Image (cartoon, rainbow, N blue to C red; front, side, top):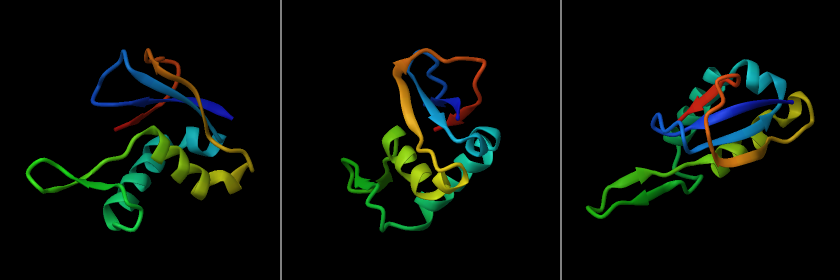
Length: 99
């Protein structure tokens, strides 16, 4: 298991640090893209909300990402992704999932 940053809109002072299986860490860009491909390909997950103008907007964060990781990548090492620290500072030693 290795650590990654979850980075939102280049906000380096409000980052979540996750512990994820090595495969996810080593392939974080592709794994993150797979997550966003999946979220935009279906509405069954329930992650769309209506904004104030009535438009449907995708609303995902760390919790949804972790759930998806554990549903799809736990089999690689039989270990679950978890939050190590929430709302902390970016660590340049870890790769990032950019939201």
